[in-house]
Length: 177
Image 1 (cartoon, one colour):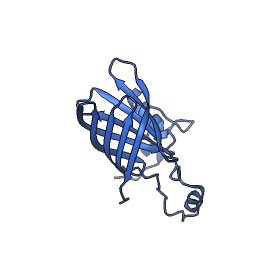
Image 2 (cartoon, rainbow, N blue to C red):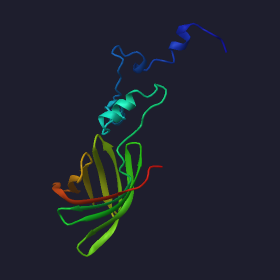
Image 3 (cartoon, rainbow, N blue to C red):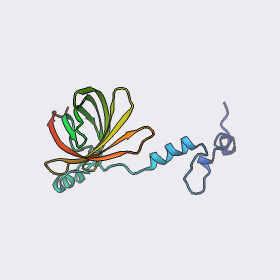
């Protein structure tokens, strides 16, 4: 293999990502372009939702260590919605991502659910999908003060979303790992 000049290497870097005058490149493929846009979206701060003193302590931490502290939402949740649906969820947390499983109950019916979401600022945002996957509940819970409050939207294929309030929230935290 020969060591050549810059023109030898340049032939391998003809993609516009290497030559874009603005420094930004978006693919013409819609799905790749959407991914590129989402990667550039702002993410929640590592200190979002922390008290001012905790934020100050985090800012004085050595620059070699990254502070990754988010509000704790891991644990057992019981969430009752205004439409009389109740969810019993066991949620786990890794960084700002939240996920878990549980059960739903409404009148005499019940079944399993899967849940996933995130902590954004002081809000727990979870999507709850009952087994069978014919509807999706989007739930937002404000974790900034007790008692917790929230709202939900019920999505069904071919129908307008139903919006409502969360009536009751019980949370038993699990210890952080």
